[in-house]
Amino acid sequence: NYLLPKLTALLEKFSAPKQLGHIELVAADNGVAMLLRYTKNLAEIDRTLLLKFAEQEKLMLFLQSDEGIEQNYGDSPYYQFSDGIKLHFDIRDFIQVNRALNERMVNTALDWLELNQQDCVLDLFCGMGNFTLPLAKRVKNAVGIEGVFEMVQKAAQNAERNQI
Image (cartoon, rainbow, N blue to C red; front, top):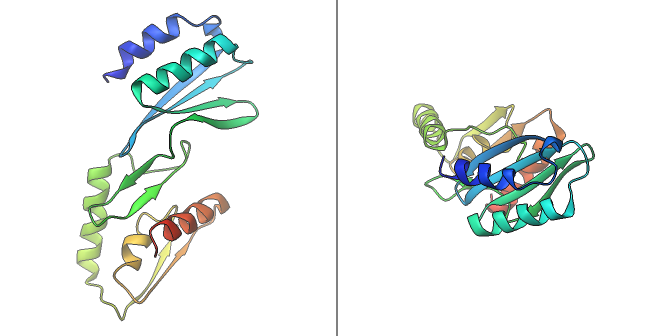
């Protein structure tokens, strides 16, 4: 919420505000990620304003045109569980929006399952590894199944980053 007045002031300075589609803000554990969708070529002066704003506010800045999304400033957003697992995600990935509630949900499921190092677990629709990676730290073998190829790649990258 603290960003909204600053963002409004920034957008009032744009040379062609009608070319803007929408803005998405995502609160990650390593900062705020901002996606700005634009419908026509973004003027260089507007791009410069955005980059300065991202730097000042320490935002991860993503710009989306008809050609796709490009990251223009900052790191990859992630959220981190209390056990140290970091789940990196792209700005348009499906994520659980309430990180604290998500972690409680995962921990509750883990408690109910009463897993040990001899167990093998199958996680259907694993996404980027939200359940699979915390499971994998506690069991002999965890397999995540996912139908979206990009999310399979993201889960594999997250497993590698977390040395799982």
